[in-house]
Image (cartoon, rainbow, N blue to C red; front, side):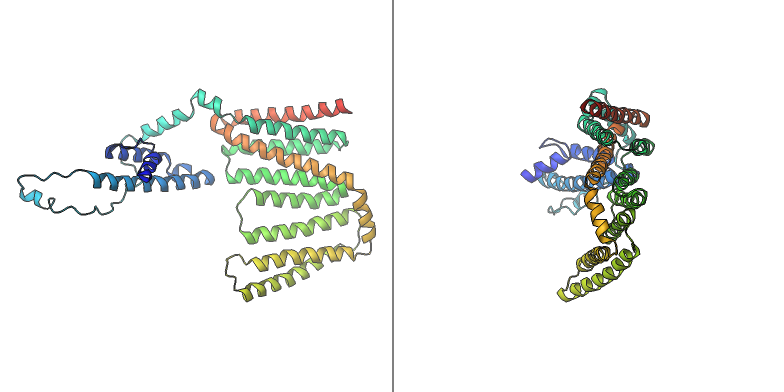
Length: 382
């Protein structure tokens, strides 16, 4: 009986509801949670598919349960037209549930209007404002501004931070939802800006360019749902580019050896990993051994080539002396990425309560206040 009560709960009904009530609840919920209504948002569409599957299962179970529990009455007199229905009762054969694409409801549009009005009532909006994410956005941008001022970062660093923040807000306002594409663009910009500032802090323009490329690719990967092999390839190549960019920015010679060494060792590691997969009979679709061999081989080759460079000692000295700058760059990078993530999380909620322009305006004010507060705090401390 607990299972039956759970099915009632899924259909948002009280236990003991009639079959007609079950049918009506199913039609309403099938319309509300039909995946086609979320065609522009893959995340919500996947969630709707899960809900619709649960709704269909609950409806089928309850319909069978209620049909089977109905009392039977045997008529005193049978007519020829009734004879075929008076045979001993058999378990009802499963009938296809009404297609959620066309719910059996002549007032489908009315249900949609009622659902929309319910989710946009003023008191609901007030209770759903994402205060936590907005506060986090304010604090992360304040942290970023504080670090930039304390360590006297160049003026263009401020432009990068503000540009990344505004790009994320603009994309969110235009997209109108927190879609996967929206997140990919926002994190791409955040990663690129963070990589540029961090790279410039430890190696100058050359390192900044290399690390900006790495940041863009990592941000794009984080904002999408790539396959495991794609992630492994991107992370491996990014590691080599980051090392090569740092060496080149600090005056190392023969940086090309880093690339060549990583390619050779990556190939060797991939072959070795593939052999291991075959020996142990690993039949997963990803090929864990070959991926790990590729990653480890590429990084070992890159670092061994860097260590054997004619100016490896000079690079090691530069790395040691760049310690404070590395810390500054990492703090700024963390602040930018975390600020954009908090901003996007808040924007996903706000875009459901307000229009795109209002969402943009709220996020712009919060991030601007955060930057201003961080700047003011740093001047007071200094």
